[in-house]
Image (cartoon, rainbow, N blue to C red):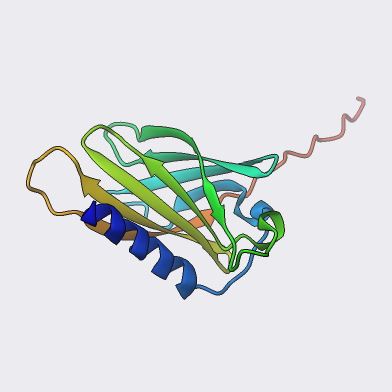
Length: 152
């Protein structure tokens, strides 16, 4: 129970640390880690589905990245009276790969996405729980422009 309380207090302090506001739509997109040599999270895809956000995460694996799966995230506003769709400051998502609980706290920072990952080991391995911060850039979709057909 103490670990869960530490987890929750860490989330609250992180949420209050960044006063930036964003709409849910500003989180939407395909985001890739700015560190192409990361040993952690490599890519995140965020979709808006109604008033909810769905997050799909990939981690570094060999030869291809591991798909952690899709999760509905929990959006947060600065205070209880704000509309989440227009005033989202952070999203959280929880993954449980079997050996650990992984909590992601996702925030916008300018044009970047900052993701803090908290890993709590549940396999009695004796490993220390830890946290990492990742920075992501948004992939821009390039829409091909068809070339005109010139008759001969």
